[in-house]
Image (cartoon, rainbow, N blue to C red):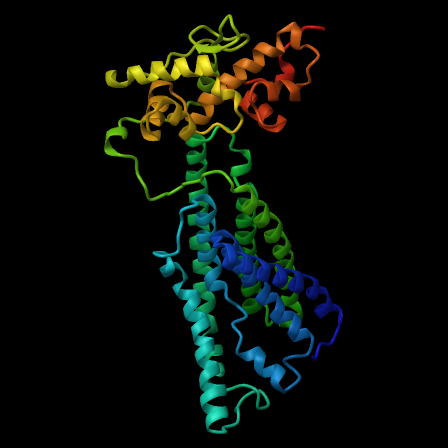
Length: 434
């Protein structure tokens, strides 16, 4: 196979080959196991690999060989950016909802599928109908490019504008979903660190920044003069780096999404529970809410008196009379069974223990306790951690040990939550000498 190694082709090769291999692996795994997130991540990788591969093969001599290699270059959809934004959007949806299906989502992929279809149609017309059936020579680029492929080149300006519009539109829409997903996590999970997919959010921001860079290249190309292939090569080198970034954060996200995620942005709560929902408390009020948790004599945690070294007590918001018994049942369960000591506690598990549904329990916590589920559970953990930090029997424990004893999953989560709910770091709490 023709491949001329040079500085520019060789530097792009390490991005193309691993990206293509990983994409094929993910697509194969998706086909075997029905893992939609794996399949969409594989497609995303291919969407990034193809443009870099075009530039790599171009510098390897394929456009200049004036034979079958050149013909291949004109009938592959190397710039499938029309699909990038929609596929990333659908990939995020598949990660955050294990019941998500593409059955009603194909409209998002219509522009990208049309783009691929045009190239397939051009190949059938030029290479199948014209050259194979009627023996007509290809009229362009030294006999390697047909009329339909030449016509496709004329669509590039309009296609480029649509590319930018779709990437920007879907990018912003996905960022909005990230914000709503974060609220969903806080309302349903007590440990959200590994489910926040911050790497994917940063990747999306990097892609949108890359979009601005591409627009900058286009402006320079038209204002200053043609930048040439060498000028654009640097943009493709940067896109090659994005392949590795996408591989790392995507695989991490795919393996992290093991919790029962059911995020559905279009869904609304039943009418009976959309009753003057209480917004999340600001930081000072959230810190004060921790003080509603006290240490019972037997070591259990209950609501009522101020906790050790916490701000002034904050009264819980009023609750509809018919739901008051549920709040009392919840308080009793938290005090007696201490489910907050389980790092992976979810709203669904707590509702199951109370023998009710998640909608009712979420409403009781949000309205009756003035907190989302995450802050509600973590307030118990923080109170327990404060108690242990000031107990001489735990003076020999490290902060990590205290965090694990109080139900936290990691030191970083412990530090972040403790600071959020109390306004102090764990290290600022005075500890007795052993």
